[in-house]
Image (cartoon, rainbow, N blue to C red; front, side):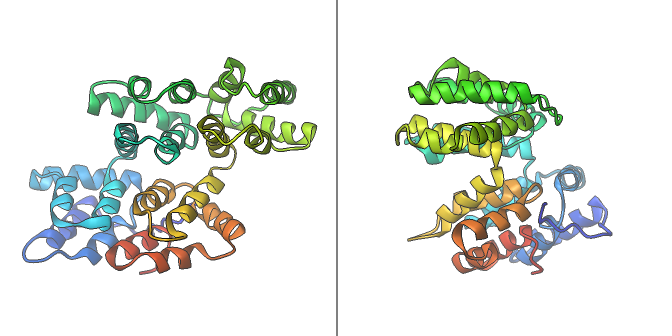
Length: 318
C-alpha cells in the first residue's frame, strides 16, 4: 500500500554516495539527482547511504544537504533522509516546544504514538531520550495541561502487542464500557484511557466495530456529540489514527492544501511519514473525502523541486 518506487536493481550505497557527492560538489546543486536517488530508496537503503557517506567523506549527509538545499524542499529531503525514529522524535519535540500547542501540534504526537507500529514507537522513545536527554513522556507532562496530558502520556508510554489477536467477547464488553463513559461525558476517565492505550490495534478496531453495531453510532460520532473542546478533538484524533490512519492523513493533507495558502509542514509530514506505509490507501481516502485527485491537488499547490520530491514519494515518474 506504499507509493515509494524502489528500482528492481539498486546501485550500491557507495555508488549512490558518489552521485550524491557529485550533486552537492562545486558550483550549484543537482537537485534532480538528489530527488532521483533519495526519492527511490527505502528506509534501510537510506540508512546505508547515510553511513557510507560518513565513512567515505567524513561528513554527515544530513548536514551537507542542510547546507546545500533551501526552503520546503530542504525540509522535505532532510525529513525523508533522517532515520524515521529520529525524525519522529524531532517532530514530537518541535510540536511540544511550540508556543501555541493547539490540536494541530498535539495531533503530531498522536500520529507518532497511535498510527505507528509498537516497535517504531519504542524506537522513537529511545531516540527522543538519546537526542534530548529526557523522555518523551517527561516533555508531554511539562508542556501539555490536564486532561490532554493524561491521554498523551498514556498512548506515548504504551507498548502494545503487535500481532493480529482479537477477542470478540472483550470487544463487546469494552464497547459497552466505552459507550457508558461517553454517555456520561466523562471522557478523561481511566477506563477509556486504559482501553485506548493498552489494547492492540486489531482488538481496538474490533471494539470500535462492535460499538457501531451495538449502539447505532460510531464512537467518533458519539464523542463529537459530547462537545467541541480540545478533549473531544484529541480523543477523536486518537481513535481515527488507530482505526483508519489513512483517513486521518488524507484529512491532514486536505486541510494543508485546501483554502487560502498551504501548510507545507503538515503536507510534508504526512507524505514523508506514510510513503512507505499506506499512501496508496490515503490516495483513495482523499478522493472519497474531497472528491478530487490527491496527486492533482498536491501538484496544483506546490512547485519546483519541492513538488517533484513529494510527487516522487507519491510514486510519480518525474
